[in-house]
Image 1: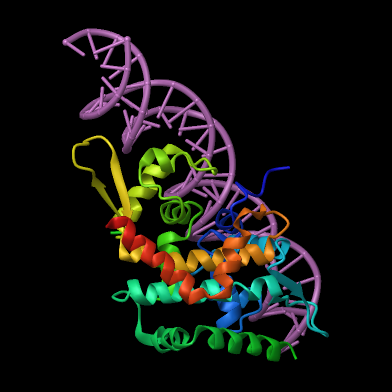
Image 2: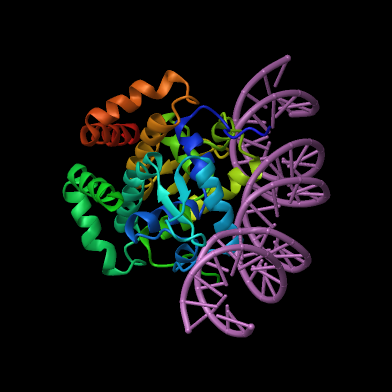
Length: 139
Length: 139
DNA sequence: TAGAATAACTTTCATAATGCAAGTGAAAAT
DNA sequence: ATTTTCACTTGCATTATGAAAGTTATTCTA
């Protein structure tokens, strides 16, 4: 079997799992756009190729970051959802957003700025509110 | 010219710059191991290939995340240091460490755990202490 | 001060990952 | 019954990564 991890370092090990240009975008879409099907993911602004999307969805599932399921009465559409492990990527994603907000200002549209500002003003509560929303969505 | 960014999304844009398996490891070594030269970076546990290291150092410099300099009286050794933009990657890296600590526990050695626990207990002050250490190192 | 060692790469070539376009098969809608 | 939709897969070109050896300019050492 091929080694999954390059070392025992927590940073390195996380990058072994999600250190690419696509995985976190799928997670982002699940967290902030409520996307949950293959075709929804394939419609992102960043134009992920269908084979890469397919590959990442199965990797993320294998890693226990997302789940794959169905809705009753529909055999066609697969419904992907975040596991706890996946949900806990939220703080990472928010810090990334903040870094971009601080350091790539020229390039970014203004849309996300109020969002990041709200996060900055009280990170803990901001994160807990989103976690609560995750709960609600699952009923 | 080739487009650097896939979209205006802050997450996507950050990943366009540092969304790979090596860039953040170089930053990590600068932040936590005080590494600053090519040969120090090439000695990491994760065994980065020399051509990739070279490529990443120049990318990171081009992106304004690190600086390349010399020490007086030494024309040979290049000294790399973090810019403000680079230093601000600290919160991202710490959140990644925390995620691994929470979710990859079986795989990780115990060494980093007290560190992450300290971070968890008071993130703001932990981060500010490290920022202060950055200042000190530069004199 | 001549030769050895070191620092920082570069080059070459094999392998793996990504990207693009087209194609497939089952399920659902018309 | 036929067309659409959904979730992929396949084939092939391009790009990125990895391993090993080679290069050049210092700097150290005998």
